[in-house]
Image (cartoon, rainbow, N blue to C red; front, side, top):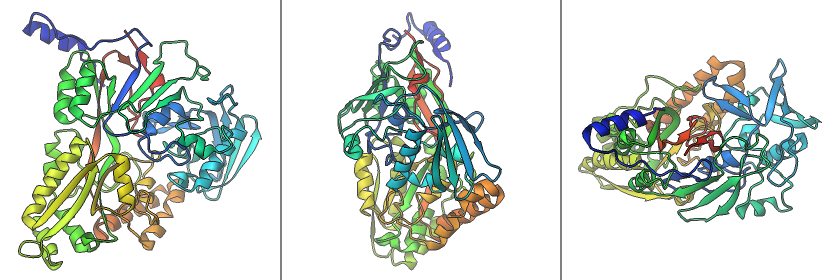
Length: 519
């Protein structure tokens, strides 16, 4: 994060009679915090099933037992104030914070924690797999809950997950699933849902929960508004005019403007978010592994990274640097000669049968648009026509579940600060598919991956070896995907916002309660 206001203003005053006006700011706490995202926010209201963009709102509405701290790289207290594990790592006891209530008014106690996690485990969808090691949950008292595990896992880290770890009031309504889908919440966080306009630009509004356990004595934002604006240039203009408070991602040109703009601040950090090109291994022309490998080899990865001018970093393997499972020195490289040979073996390529491939990507994702242009240009000399379609996330995901494309471009981040979800959710066999949008069905890989959670606790070196084998298997042996880059999180926000920090374990999340508004 950089402070640029004074220096930028001084430079402008040297060049002109007066500085450009800064974005307007309302008095402290009165103006809403307006978060502008390029796509829709809510895909699922039920916190047991949530597994997508709504993380940016849910982390302000719901809370987890722990929170991952990017400085210490360890779990920190949230709803739990402390925890301990047995020597063998198979029993964990969490002591809960007293005085916490749900937005429904009910007390958050050990019974509520047990009921919430058990309901999420029974859902068997989204990221509920994070609790697979749990064999039972036992209430030890009003503020103590014990988890018995079938095998050791770092449960304090699991409990910090951005999905499936939320604690919510299971008694909020008799038909809880129906109640959630009406746009209601049952969280304990600092904000509660007050308005949901499905499919609209002004999609979601949250308001301060007066009974929040940490209080509202100091200045806070009392309202959060989430707006879906696919056009990044318009989003930036909204920020300049003070109509937006925070924009989560800008292309390199807009980010450079924001860095130099009076009245704005920027943040530029490495992330755990990886761009993925998932290939349809189940049907269509890319069912042929030679075609998949050819597309892998055709893309000019270095050219794409250079074209994005600092907003991304080269990917190496499947898991990004900073997490167990990262494989260094595996950055992909273009090899047109090999791509041509593989296509000709499959009956395509120059002089062969023309090939058309359907690709979907995120509407409004400027970086993905660059990828599409570069890939199309690389494939055209190989007698391949790329039909690319930008879609809002909900529509793209639904089409992907129906195997409606040859290449599915998406961003992926971990369920918690661990490498397993990059494989376990994206490449482990799943029928019907949820996030396995390469439709890979590989028992050998499944068996390999099933050993990782326990090894992460008992033998990290062995876990790393498994990840390395899985990386080779997915990218080389099965050619199920290509990894073009890892994102640098480039944010821009109003200069009056104090206390913002980026946490890569919770991508694009702004913990608004922690901010200080200033007039």
